[in-house]
Length: 102
Image (cartoon, rainbow, N blue to C red):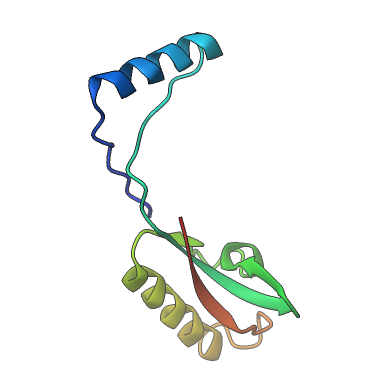
């Protein structure tokens, strides 16, 4: 699960965000969060084609996005263990990677 921290803004930045919200309409609210890396767990389904594991292994209960590399590594290890054990033969196995995005 990805956890966000609110950004620390000065008064000028807050006023700029309020002005932008007003220009977009009453139904829009903007939140400023700190930029942080997000880790994506993906499976290689074809040459140069990587897809999120949630799409490749539906119903297994894994997320594709994690806020720390340790969580992503644990998910990858658990998934590989399940594919070799309890889920053997139910899904096609693909190479799995962890990619950092921002």
